[in-house]
Length: 105
Image 1 (cartoon, helix red, strand yellow):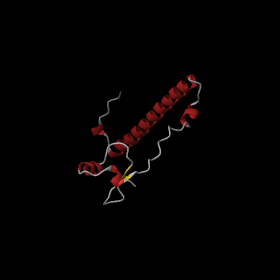
Image 2 (cartoon, rainbow, N blue to C red):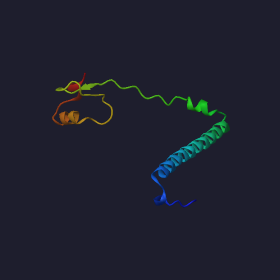
Image 3 (cartoon, rainbow, N blue to C red):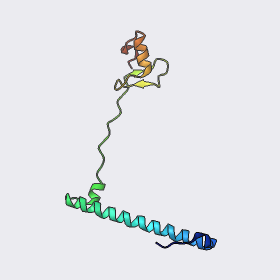
Image 4 (spheres, rainbow, N blue to C red):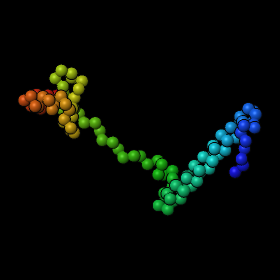
């Protein structure tokens, strides 16, 4: 690698050097992406697919939202489906002696 005395360069030379470095970095990144793509295509081909076929695959479908079963008595916008951890407002009400049916929708 060439040693460059940056202190000896003029502002115009430093700016040109900066432009050249930006281009060199972009070119390097493009070459690395091309290498990665070629490697991915080779692996896909080993398994009998094209990279395009694999890229078009849809991800596993997400589960649909579950309808709420319970509603907060003071704020009807707050609901709970009955799945997962009990919200604090349900847990507090159950400790106070209420039942889940009291909050059923």
